Length: 309
Ligand code: DON
Image (cartoon, rainbow, N blue to C red; front, side):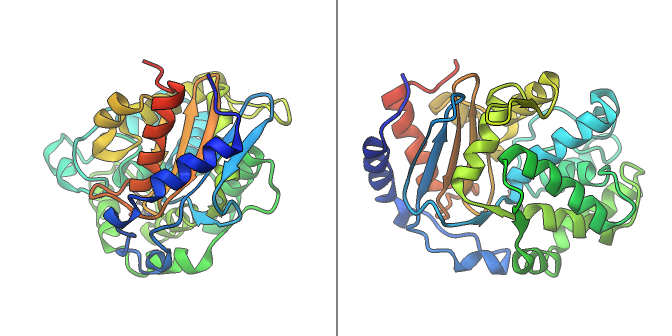
């Protein structure tokens, strides 16, 4: 069964919004703390092109960690899985997304997976281009193909806010560079990374990206295969095992769909063969997932049996 009623979706969004007071807007990136915790918007996009949305759908937000799926797809296409997994692992960590601890305790500073910050920085260090600007444009072009929106851009204010305060991410880079896991200029990697994290869109555009992964890389609007099936499969698998940080196991049990969240409060869901989901709810729980977004997904799961398990 699928939710094809805006009225019902609207009622579920209103219900989920009630728990917003239990969450907190991220503040470690200063520019993110301006968001209002009681905002919640959602869009569902189906393979036949139908879409349903609820809440203030115009409201844009930055992708933050959701961008890690995009850069992962790009490097998998450019270098192939073997090369990529030589630099970054495939295992969940059970640690917070910005933890440095496993870099020290695992052999060489190879990050355990591409969804934690260390792994995503290693992935970003592989993006092709002769300077930061070219690399960012390369990422943006792929996002535009996924969303069918030529105007997608990044938020300069959020990018600068993170670039100037992100000392932990710089430390992760230097640690990996020290062990030869990444090469290149750390400031340039940080510039590309903070800009990819600051890519902004609304939840309808996010759901459009989600449906492409759900459809094994086929963009159902343009009928273009924008990535090989194998790449979409690997991305969706990481979304299941590591997409919701160190709460991915619980999420797999409670909701059971490939999903990726970001600290801005975005969640992209890709229900295989069925739909793309875009949610924006900036009130976060203690691990950094959207608290209202999770509540909404729970309501959707109860009503429409989203789980793939
Ligand atoms: O690097 C950071 O901390 C943020 N730009 C993104 C963090 C985030 O969304 C959660 N990470 N998995």
